[in-house]
Length: 266
Image (cartoon, rainbow, N blue to C red; front, side):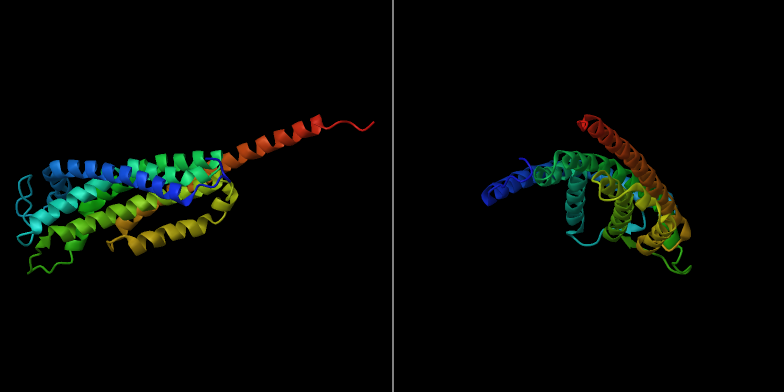
């Protein structure tokens, strides 16, 4: 559909329902994989905790200080893991369906930008999530270090899972934020100079963001997140400068061609 064409409300509802069904089907398939590989996912999530040496038996069969509570606890945990896995595994599908529902009202150039945004956002989020997983043992070690020496610390796995998901989501979303600057630049709403001009403030805000939202109080974890954020900010700014330079050159060539094509006064 071209920009400016009006789609009837009923057609909007049908398209939304169709894309919602496709997204839900993808989530169900991903959840099925999460249900099947439940034990492997649990081992993957508990490995950083067991590796720091706080568990009684840090091996693949058990992780001593983590426990599941209640009769329905194991079943609820498996359902939760399966649903979360479904959303993660099916992310490329429902992100595409979301953009496909929005982009028909945009220009051709804007549609290309949004498709590129959706394509790059997934690997960037994955990089941030993987970095969170790498620093997870250090974060857990720091937090458990506040436990008094004469006391033990038994940890419910659902609380540990919430902590892991929070850390992963914060790192993943933080890695996507600079991508918004690039998208605004490609759409012509923000120039590269405007992005890089307040670079001191941007670096300061990166550290403030990590200090405010990182669930650990230690400076090492905050720095490990702030440095990649700063690098992504500068990369997005310099990329925007290259886009601006190419855009200005194209505009200059158009002006020169229009001047040549103008008829001379007799």
